[in-house]
Length: 349
Image (cartoon, rainbow, N blue to C red):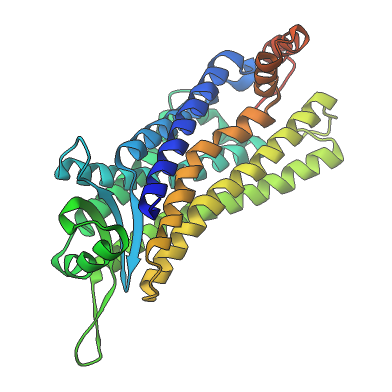
């Protein structure tokens, strides 16, 4: 199996898994969430359906990353597709915009966790129509990166000339058989100097702003949440900062949220931030990764397939529902009913 065929098959399989798991998670959120979840369940559904849309676009396009010299491209094979070259180029841009939107999703998720941990007054903005304002953050991120990719780093003659031979050697593809969006950082001139392609630098700057702002939100809110939850579990104070003791159930819930937070921090960092940043850095330095840039395509495709799992397996009412289905246990079903209806449980996820 050729490398590009392997990447294509892998992306399709993970996308199907992502759609399946996110549909299950949507059902759990709608039917098995504790009553005190409130309006936040709509934000959770928003995230799940974003990942479903992301996966559908991934199935249609199955983009593969490739770098050569100072060039990095995200390309879609068009020859056997039902869609035209121009449509696939647009879908490639939408795929890129989904990558940008996912960065906004990470930051939004951790901002909410931070508000919950400290009992912030801004938490109320997630409980009414103002939640739409928060939902616009990923949309803005997606539009910035999508428009940057489609309009600023669109195909050029310089990239065409450098890619043609390499595509044939590595993938047995002709240049006219792909729709790509690509960065071109430098070009070595005959006199030994380098020509700088500033449009790519502008695109990289936009990407850096998106990724760094996402990471800052994740790390700042994540560390503060860790310190707060750790303090609560040790000192026995609740999120309102009063000195009353919290119940055993509340302590258990705080622990669940902490473990979910750690897992959901690791998934995007190791599957999206690090791989994508590495391939861009290597291209900027002129280090030829070739087809191995496609490893980033694989790890990014894994993200929407793995992201639902921490919520499904760590949040007790969801985990119990899955277990009751797998074991057909009446006892577990009774536990699910209790967890989703008990008014004494304070649940913020």
